[in-house]
Figure 1: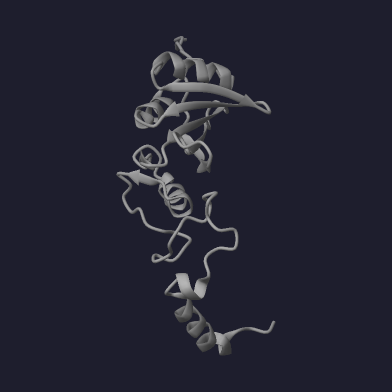
Figure 2 (figure 1 turned 90 degrees about the vertical axis):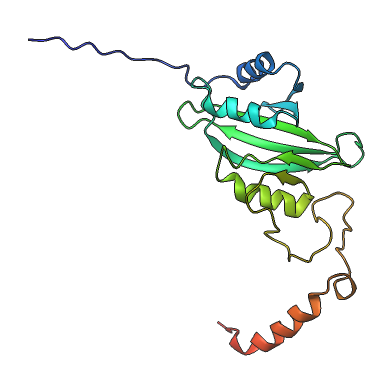
Length: 193
């Protein structure tokens, strides 16, 4: 009877987020601004310049294999003028079940960052929403346009300096009267249920 040799490569399952943060610091020492921990969650704060190489490394490295973009959003720190915004990437490895949060700093006077759509196709919708709500431009995005607000809407509703009441629609948004008119036209089709 012939004996078949089986080789099994064992990868570290479920790396600790602090270990992942250390790997990022070691690989991109000039890009890591800080490693923050809050409520048991680890965030690696990075400069935006090399965001694509950092994300590609996290995605492609066989030990990390952070192949799932769980979420992409932004945070507005209104009083921090130098780095008012952070684009937040929540990454997860389906194979190893570990995760990490990457926070890329974006300035107020140049709210741009490279698109991660070439790495995760699903980033398309996340980046459009982030653009629509915060006004952060994702350079290289295949179809960057508003996704929730009308195309001619002015302002970005999730910025902290956006008016709490929103704009006075009759005066600030030209499409308001058109929406009211169309609503009246379609009233007959409403279901009373």
